[in-house]
Image (cartoon, rainbow, N blue to C red; front, side):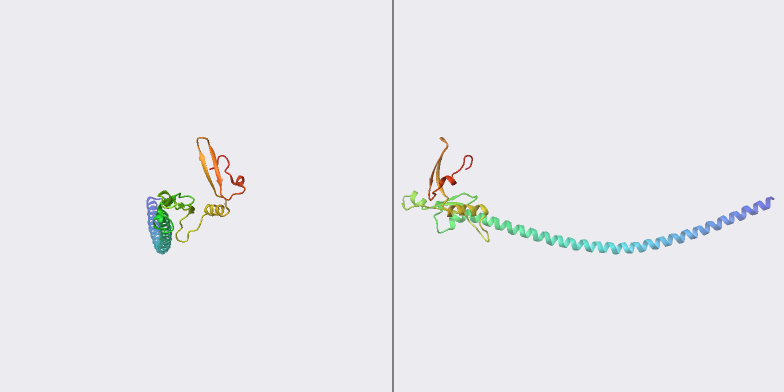
Length: 193
């Protein structure tokens, strides 16, 4: 092979390399344009999806805010009712007309008041009439007796009420059953008060 032939082959090889390089560059640019086009389309899709998600989140937030406001309003109303009930319980002796406020003793739980009707008049030597004892629970709104209060009411209705005197020095409990015929059935057992 001659020097001229070798140079010719190198020249052809160089031209071929340049040609393939240009061809590869053109194809690569075309590929990049296609990828860019696909990416732009996918951005359009994701913008749509993002807007959809934003709308869903806004709806969920509005729903959550409405539900939270409803729960807060319910809690506030319940709290107001409880506070009103507690205030009414404490002020009742001052507003009732049936009893002298001095006849009432606050118990609080499970019954609000022990009222000994006529006690103030008796203590002030105004009257010597018989005293009447009431257990009174103050209810406001739609309140009703609790399970324990109903049980206490039933005990009184059935005559299971006893007056007792306890002496801690001798640890004795002297009872005076009122209407009980079988007191032993209802007598307190040791350790119960």
